[in-house]
Length: 197
Length: 204
Length: 197
Image 1 (tube, chains in turn yellow, orange, blue):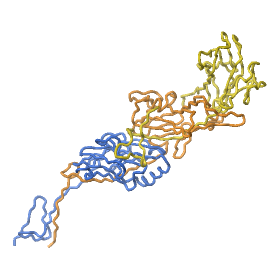
Image 2 (cartoon, chains in turn green, orange, brown; image 1 turned 90 degrees about the horizontal axis):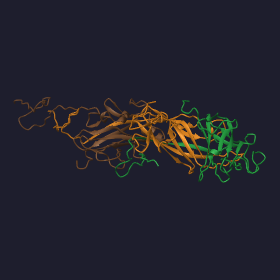
Image 3 (cartoon, chains in turn cyan, red, yellow; image 1 turned 60 degrees about the vertical axis):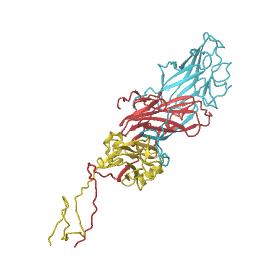
Image 4 (cartoon, chains in turn brown, purple, orange; image 1 turned 120 degrees about the horizontal axis):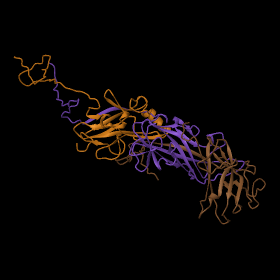
């Protein structure tokens, strides 16, 4: 924690008992200012993340077992993405992949830029749990076929715009007991950062 | 005959630089002190609005920072949870005094919640937070652009199709500018570049 | 009877108007002498107040008008700074505005009085660099703690602090303390306050 120097205070709190007040700041200004932040769920945040249906259209929240509107395999009885009603964060789950296969799942979720400036987007997949995962199994792309997981070639998303995410899984050499990934991180950076406004 | 009174002799020390034999017993000099209270953006340490969507100027142009739905019309109403957000050039600091100052900041929650760890940084150097990692060096006449960094942890916000829920966090951001150089922090100039040994970076 | 005039050294004017001076006891005498009384600028006087001495950076907040020093942190100040005043809703401390030096021959205790200032007010004048003391000493007569004592040739640095943290304090400063043409303070250097003198 940063060190603090005592700041001279006035109005009767000036030192009693005859000697030093303050501890050495020679010239100082100290100002308290209000700072307020609203935290929102993934549906309302500046960077919004939303579930989509098989056609790539945003749907209201989906519950587990909502099989009519979502792309899924018979083995997975929950939508590929839904917003947890208690946390407000989107959960993405693909849990019935074939081993040693190449699987493409389109329209997994949507990224909305609800901020005020364009952002360069890229997504990375990682495994943070115990032991080793295999995050390279997963490739992320837009529904237009642009790679989304290359941090050197992000995809620009204008403010007020959205893109739908497809996931491709190459499970060569990966079996049912292998961990794959548990974390997806969406990055968005202003491509015009640092330029005068 | 006119009466004369005996005049006591006076021993008066001559003034004007030559000190005479007399020690003075007391001197009282009445002088004027005039101090004005300026508006926030005109003061010796001026704080100015750089991002009108995030900063409001209140009484005497006192700056207030709010990161909420007033930011735009694209539907974004706040930051998401389990996220890091960076907003460049929120407000400016201009040194209108006579000495170089070292600026730091510290945030205190005022509503008792934890969940966000905010910080200020200079220019685009968002990895070095003022007061924690670095101090901002501002020479008289210089202006620095200060940005806001937010580390939002797993703050839970109810999701309901019908309702719009928000979790508001309030802080006191204490901004200090001191003439004394801190010994335990990296020093950054107003462009966000590190300076060493008291050298200043290029003036803006 | 012979008139006599009594000479008493250079510059003596014998009492005029026909006083009768006899040969023996005189009824009265008046003796005029020359006397030089000059004031000095604050930079030269017994109590030396010279912002140019020591080269303090904060000396820009002090000005001399006809040799008389004043502290001026207002838009009209001719000091080399751009600010129009201290910050609102903040605490501002400026040390080392000008030195106060004893150019007399006895130790003196220095204090200030002002009809418009009390220890509870949000404005304070203080001393730093006091010989034999660390930290700051409140200069206001009646404030807690002791006042600085400087021997001949010694000095301390005068500084001030302003607390503008509330609108009430700002009002007090603007109307009661610095209202009109500023605050009149009397700087007192008193040898009799020093023990043993």
